[in-house]
Length: 391
Ligand SMILES: Cc1ncc(COP(=O)(O)O)c(C=O)c1O
Image (cartoon, rainbow, N blue to C red; front, side, top):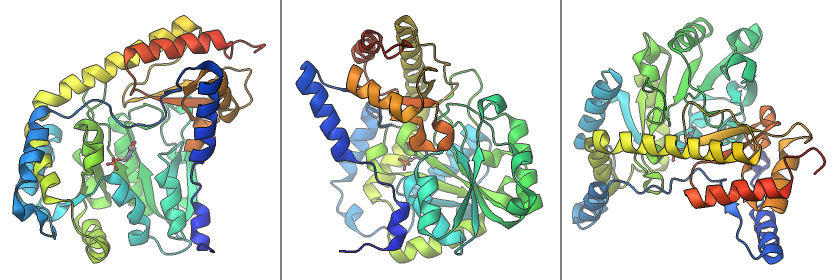
C-alpha cells in the first residue's frame, strides 16, 4: 500500500524501538524504566467534576450530535474570561474544540494555501511542525534562544518572510522551555502582526501553571489582539481533563467563522457530557487550580533538588509542567544523551531535538511521576555515570 506524499511530513515516533529498549533495560536489571516522556497529567480532576460527568452520561439528551457549543458553556466561558483574564468575549468570538490539538491540526488547512508561510517557534510543540506541512504550507522557524530568554526575536525574521507569512504560532508559558513572556513581548507581537498582516495563533495551554506571583495572562487581554488573532485555551492541564478532550478557541470572529466553516463540515462538537464537565470545571476553578499549581511547583522543586544532589544542575522553569534540562557538555547532542539516559539509567525523557533543532542540547522531563520515582531516577542517573565526562 502506498500512502499519500503528504504523510511524509509525519515523522511518527517509533514506539516499537522504544518498547524494545525499555524491555531490554528491564531484562538486564529487573527494574522498570521510569517514564517522564509523556505530558499527561497523573493528577485526577476535582471529584465534583467527575461526578458531573458521570451524572451527565446518564442523560439521554447528551447522545444527540452536538452541532454547536451549549448556551451554558458559552456563558461559562464568557464569565471565566472576564473574571480570570479581564477579557470580554462576544458569542461569535467563542468556539469549542476537542482539545487544542484538534485546532492545531486543522488551522493550516483553514488559513493557508499551498506555499504560504507559517512562522513557528523552535523548539515547538510537535503538531506545530506537522500540520502546516500536511496543508502544503511552508515553515519558517523562529529560534527561541536562551540568550533571548527563549522569546521570539522579531528583528531576526527577514522582512520578505514577514511580508509573505500568513500565520504565526506563539505559545507562552512555553512548552518545552518553561518560559513565560512579559507584557512588552505581546505589545511587540501585536505591532508586528499588524504591520505585516499576519494572523497570530496564541496557544495558551499553561496560563494556570505559572509559579511566581504573577498569574499567566490571555493574549486577548492586550490592546488590538482580537484584531490580529485568536487564542486556544485547553482544559487538559488546568483541569486535568486531557483524556476528555476539551479546549476553547477564542478571539477574532472572522478567524472563528472560517474555522467553523471547515470543522462543521467534517465533524461535530465535543460530546455534550464533556461540555457539561467543562462548565463544572470552570465553576470549580478557584477550588482546584491553586492546589494544582502548587503541586506542579512542588514537583518541579523536588525534581530539580534531587537532580542537583545527583550532580546535574538544571535551571528551574518559571511555568508549565515540564523541565527543560541542559545535557552535559561531553555529549554530542540530546538524542545521544537521551539514549544513554534510557539504556544506562532506565530513565525515559524526550530528546530536545524532538521539539526542533534548537533542542539539540536539552532533554525534557514531564512532571508526571511521584516522589519515589523521581528519587529513584536521580539515583540511577548518578550511578550510571552518564553525567561524568568519561562515562
Ligand atoms: C503547548 C501545547 N499545546 C497544546 C497541547 C495539546 O492540548 P490538548 O490536550 O488541549 O489537545 C499541549 C499538550 O501537551 C501543549 O503542550
